Image 1 (cartoon, rainbow, N blue to C red):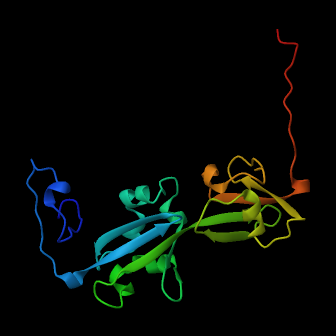
Image 2 (cartoon, rainbow, N blue to C red; image 1 turned 90 degrees about the vertical axis):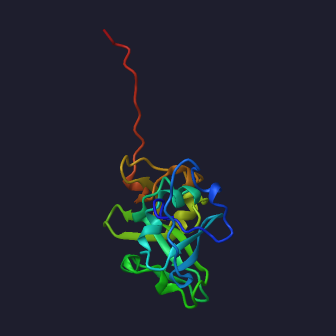
Image 3 (cartoon, one colour; image 1 turned 180 degrees about the vertical axis):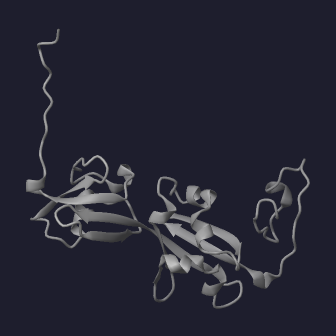
Length: 201
């Protein structure tokens, strides 16, 4: 359907996807020019039909797809696509400019992409960047700390990149709505206290 840029399956009923009071333009396309794509994030799956000429980045910039996958709180720049095959292939940003058809070996073959979130952690002491791809955000801060492969006896805490607040080790990453953190040592932290003055005039 041209206006909505969607592919209508041959078994779909037109009235179920259109407003019957409006006129629509439907283009007939060759079966070899489209593929079915499965996008997976955590426990959510979305199957869509797309033109093989469509660029991969279009999938990550489609608000409807991100909403179905419960990814509305994450920037598409923080998403990593993994091609699910016998050998999983992480698609770098360079691959995002390529057409989806490049990943279909057989015409109309189902193409499966796993979406991971790129968590960016910067060591506070030397600014060393650490990137961790996560296919599931339902992990604790402590589990994320362990995945940095840095000594947790030395680097004990994760803080927000913006407010510098230290997270409790049992906080769940999915509840934080953050993808950028700072990794800090104990001697790089402090516990401020605010005392109310009794001498208010």
